[in-house]
Image 1 (cartoon, one colour):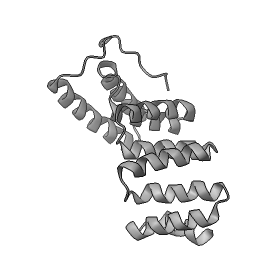
Image 2 (image 1 turned 45 degrees about the horizontal axis):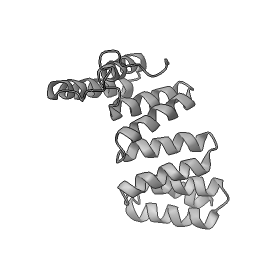
Image 3 (image 1 turned 180 degrees about the vertical axis):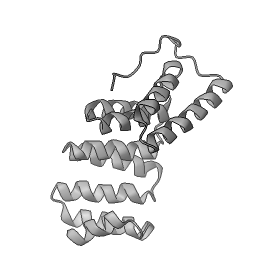
Amino acid sequence: MQDPPHNSNNPMGTPPTDDQVLEHEQMLQTAMQHQRAGRLAQAEQLYRQVLASDPNQPVALHMLGVLAHMAGQSELGIELIAAAVVSAPDYVSAHNNLGNMLRELGRLEQALAAYERALAHKPDYAEALGNIGLAQQGLGRTEEAVSSYRRALAIKPELVDTQNNLGNV
């Protein structure tokens, strides 16, 4: 995985035209299909094409960050996803994935902050609540973790991982 692209085609950061936005949406859909099918190099190439003309495109930044993390480059993944949430502060799944990466690296307080930002934009985001529980549990805050797990399950009872986490507290 390479470093984030530098935008030579759009040095002033001019917003993309409507046609470019539509083209980017199509490219992003194709890239995500490639990613789901395990064709990661093709997905990465398309995300980078989008970022070459719109370096602040939040979905491309987020998904490229996920790819970086999958490739073992978690710090680059964190950097890319952090840029995505700067570009789109209400992008809750990016906040959640940022929290997941931080939690996996043992940066639990930072992970909690990322999950809380997701909840600030979507208070019923059960997955983020379950992840808050994981971070709290990792910090030894068991009662808070139990409360977070229960809140998550009250919203979305089918979260099997959260059910298991609650059962293991």
